[in-house]
Image 1: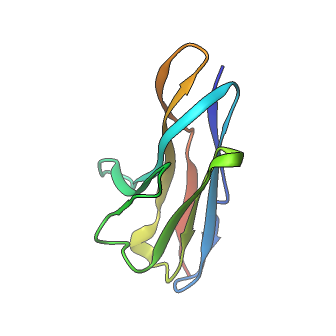
Image 2 (image 1 turned 135 degrees about the vertical axis):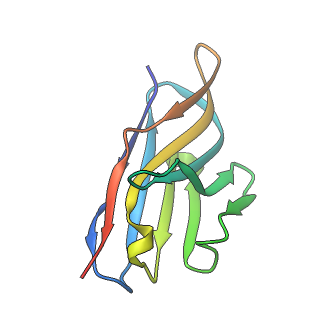
Length: 119
């Protein structure tokens, strides 16, 4: 059974920084891509950033220049470094992954980690 586990959320003041981590655990054969989405209360889940195993990245316009996504293929882990945080970044952040395990292709979601930006 493969699953995703996020960590690193919390409360931070405006202008502060946080690093989120998400590890794919279990019998992972290969990772194609991993990413981060977020969902604020009353809003739809939206893409924050995504990275393919070859290194291509995609960012939402709202986070370009402030957030950086990276992947450690050896550790099956994706990171999201968030700088210059604002209250508008407050949301539950979800990790996702496109991967192959011993059964075949899977698209998985993590449980989410809360990020709150407030003074």
